[in-house]
Length: 150
Image 1: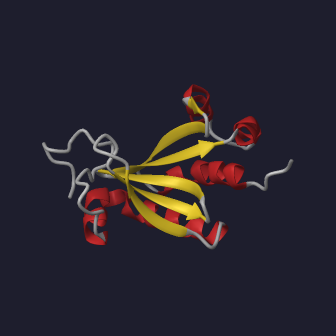
Image 2: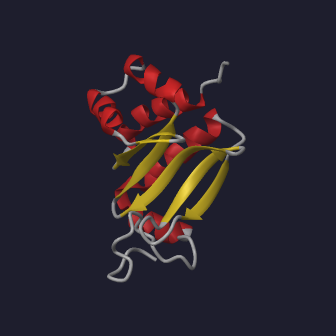
């Protein structure tokens, strides 16, 4: 169920913990951003197969988000909002270090520099309104998923 007065404080448009959104509810809520959501899921599944889509309720403050995972590793978090969605990604130190040389837009690099640091990495959320917003997100995912070397 989309955000209402009862759950309007959720980051996600879906704050009712009883069930994740149905495909129809998701498409209706995303509106013009729905094709970008579908394309991002397709691209991640193609690049990092096999992947798993897993809806997760992270509490009243955050609501429902879709985790795109490769085994036990979350590639991206997709957070539906009205007419758009947010993409969350947590980058390790090596990915953050590589970001300035990855051809990312200045706005993304600035957001990354200002992003909070956690024990698991640097957490970043980027808004997506249409498919033109996807290339930097896919570059960040590639940095995150690059093979780890000792």
